[in-house]
Length: 330
Ligand SMILES: NC(=O)c1ccc[n+]([C@@H]2O[C@H](COP(=O)([O-])OP(=O)(O)OC[C@H]3O[C@@H](n4cnc5c(N)ncnc54)[C@H](OP(=O)(O)O)[C@@H]3O)[C@@H](O)[C@H]2O)c1
Image (cartoon, rainbow, N blue to C red; front, side):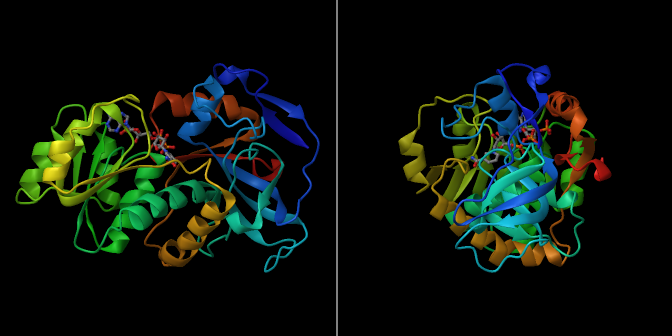
């Protein structure tokens, strides 16, 4: 099969097309005929060699895809060859076929075409895990989504609205702020020239944010604590502003605040299965009702994977960048 491989780390040009052996399903797995994959921030880090990819992961990038089931391994129930699915993958989705644990499959929502469905699994699983499972966001609570116009952020805003929360989002300004509002944020905050702490506090009668989904890490920690409500929860999912920070425990304790850090990819299979089950139960009905839809910025053909990476690196996108894999869709 054809795949985009990474013979060595580097810039987008390091991604090259190659013929590689077809995957075969192990027990508990299916092989998907990939129609589309979607890019993630982690792909850029892995390509540059700064992700710290576990050694056991395949050398082919790509952590989510959509497609049809091509083959089914032993001990898999409830799925048939030809089923249209999207899937959370640990790697290998930049390819015509990928083997995936059946527990990481989601049925293609009836109202989302198979190409756009590739944009759903990673965002849905990250949002369910951090906003619903770990942070327990409830209706009427206030959530601050940093990076609201990104792939994760666009899903997080919609999911938080579907839960019935009040949503605030930070974004880089201009059109991105309007897009956050269109997706359900009651206020978009420019991270370039506005102070999110003051705005959150003023807009919530000094209550603050009950839940903060943070992609920034170190440089945002102190301000996130300032913006946090009593009994608030901060879920750090990204370290875009740095890895090391001092935790002001006194200020956290004064608010009875909780601080979580998570990473989806290197979790054990059982934990991923539980997350995907949670997505299926709590979020898929909102997708199928149209309350949460994939935000697809641009679709690139497989041959232009490097161009797609360059585009993501430019930071101009809103939502997800999708890459079609099957020629007929390119
Ligand atoms: N822990 C996990 O399990 C997990 C899973 C998935 C993703 N992530 C993390 O989630 C983050 C988003 O990933 P993605 O795939 O959605 O990437 P993405 O689409 O490229 O989003 C990156 C986001 O960062 C925002 N950003 C840049 N500078 C910022 C600042 N100073 N303040 C606030 N936001 C800022 C961008 O905002 P503008 O576009 O408005 O400039 C954009 O929304 C990444 O850090 C990624 O590593 C973590």
